[in-house]
Image (cartoon, rainbow, N blue to C red; front, side, top):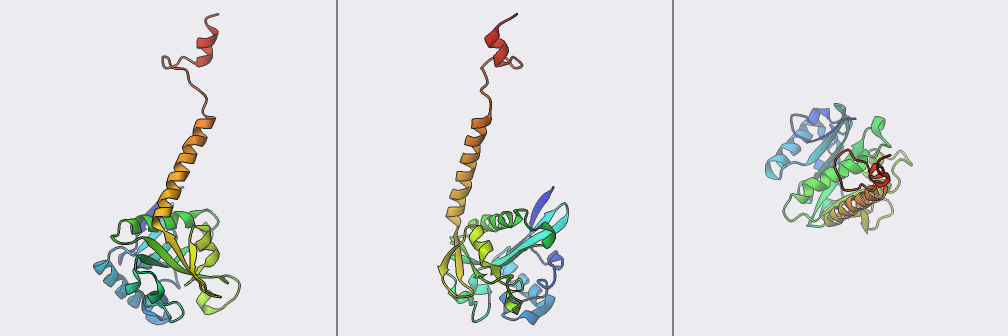
Length: 216
């Protein structure tokens, strides 16, 4: 399964799935901005701040995407105001894995790609996001994909920093992600070392058993 991650640009923005392609709830504070409104927002952020999204492809097909930006570029809504986001954080506005690719662990890979980009930005120490504690449990308009499920955020390492009965704010420290990745790599190497058979030092092609037993 070939996997590829690319930045969201004006050239590939049309590949964002509906309704996300035309929704500008986060960008402009209203849903009805349309594709042109989203493109205007993308153009401004790309010009002034740089990449503000990631797309994930599996075998050439779009499998998921994430959009993020500093809070100064995000209008949001009164209930989900970007003004509440910490000044040292980038706001993860939305992310989605398409249904066909769900339950495959790609959500964590997508968030790690966002973290990698955020680490390259001066002064950015964390990602923050609003989560919906009732995502998938009702049909309220705001829970239709614009607000990330709270369960997903906690599953990929975010911690609650501001409680709310419906839309708490979460934070993911970038350094903690680096530490987690290093710990995983160390644990992986130890596990591999535990299952690798010991090899005797000697010429290539000579097995330890032959050396120990000697010639017949």
